[in-house]
Length: 177
Ligand SMILES: [Ca+2]
Ligand SMILES: [Ca+2]
Ligand SMILES: [Ca+2]
Ligand SMILES: [Ca+2]
Image 1 (tube, rainbow, N blue to C red):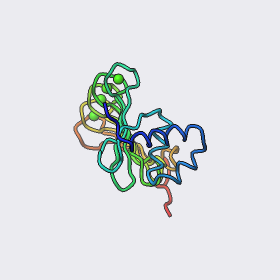
Image 2 (image 1 turned 90 degrees about the vertical axis):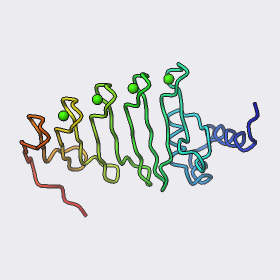
Image 3 (image 1 turned 180 degrees about the vertical axis):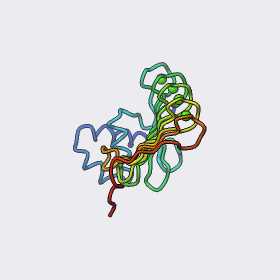
Image 4 (image 1 turned 135 degrees about the horizontal axis):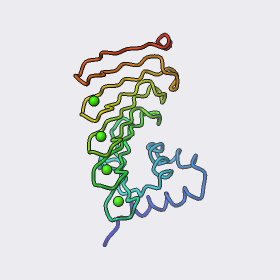
């Protein structure tokens, strides 16, 4: 097996980083945010960000099948996907914006192969959560948040026909700058 010199250097840099401050790493690579994420999650770096879309992957339960991935979405955005129950189907995804903050998150809560819980962030702060509470493939609960924690409005489709039939406001819409 032949490993390119570049890859060896790259791994050497990764190893060095473990023994030094992350700040030095940040200065070295423009993709530093994603790399810091990889390191914190224990990912193995498998390729250059330049060519491959999938730039990192790992096998958390060591069963020989990849269950975590990091993708370069371009424009400094990255997505982490996971197969948390190791059944071969992705059941979790997290997108980081160009500033390294959470932008979008989704999960398959009941592990039936369909995402059913969706989180929308603004500058890293949760502002909307959409849920398919009965797992029929259609969202039926919308939770609107202020400052990431305060619920100011809830909407529901209580009979699951696809139309909102319940709405309650607990406060005014959040003020935005
Ligand atoms: Ca695995
Ligand atoms: Ca799964
Ligand atoms: Ca599901
Ligand atoms: Ca539903």
